Amino acid sequence: MSESAYRVETAPRLAQWRIDALSSTTYRKSDPFRIGLWNWFLAVEKNKQLFVKLYPEVSSLTREQPPIASFIIKLISTSSPNRRTLVHPGISDKLLKNNDDFVWPIDILFSGRFIIDVEFLDLKIVAQPGGEPCSIWTGYDIEKHSVATALTSLGRMLSEGIHTDIIINATDGTIGAHRAILATRSPVFRSMFSHNLKEKELSAVNISDMSFEACQAFLNYIYGNFQADEFLAHRLALLRAADKYDISDLKEACHESLLEDIDTKNVLERLQTAHLYRLPMLKSCCMRYLVNFGKIYEIRDEFNVFLQNCDRELIAEIFHEILAAWKG
Image (cartoon, rainbow, N blue to C red; front, top):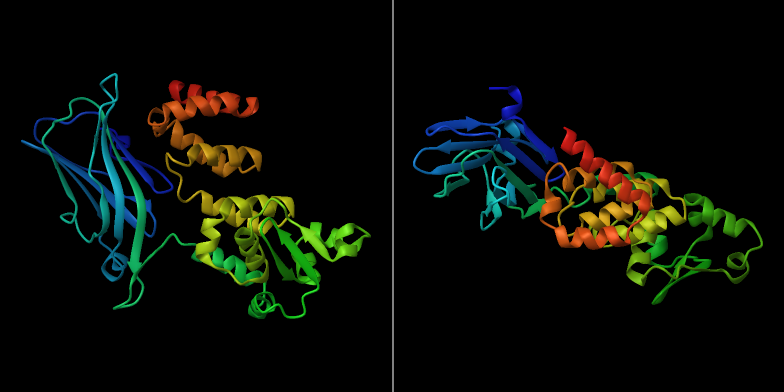
């Protein structure tokens, strides 16, 4: 059997193991694959029933910080014309330490080729003994970017309105800010305040395409007063603002975060966003998710509507990706 028969293909939060066929009595374990902090294995055992297992690799990390996983797992028959799919009811916040912690017994035996598809919804760890589990995907890396670009004291200047000298007008509220800080972080703001433009004369900047909450998150990032929850809630608005005001580190932070949780509900929006804001990694990942991992079949109607409204250049790229997958 070829080495590729044991390889699991991965994308952010997604793993797929393609199995050509199983004999009447078989046990097969995949090669290790990386999702989150851990290496993982999938295993199948076929006897009177088919058993599917998912578990982390035994290591010091697994012993000290075992994953608490939430995921959806499916079996997809690729031999049948209609891609018959069997879906597990779903796993939420299950502690996984060894190969007996998640076992899916299946009475229906799949014949021919099939795919085991695992979509990780969340992975948590208990950071301290006795503490509450916390997700590994809540933006801690983004926080490091934010803190590195501004002193902690800047957060107090914003939150307490210390010596503000300019007003930011959002769609549904106003926030006091500081010209010097905005100008330091954004060449667009610097240009506004350096020339005789209306923003300099009126001591106000109108950001009419952002809500008050999104604008607050935008300024919090600039000032180093980072909040992970509000960052995740307003990523698309923050991406637009980062692109508009040329704040490259925020744009990259949004890009990296949007790569982490692509799913069938948001993949088309993410693909359009990647095209609009020139985000090649996000575009490539969305393409792979749709085409290589076969998710295009699950959102066929939404995809048809998407094609009717999206840019011609993007349509051409999508069909080029589909043709390349067929040839492969």
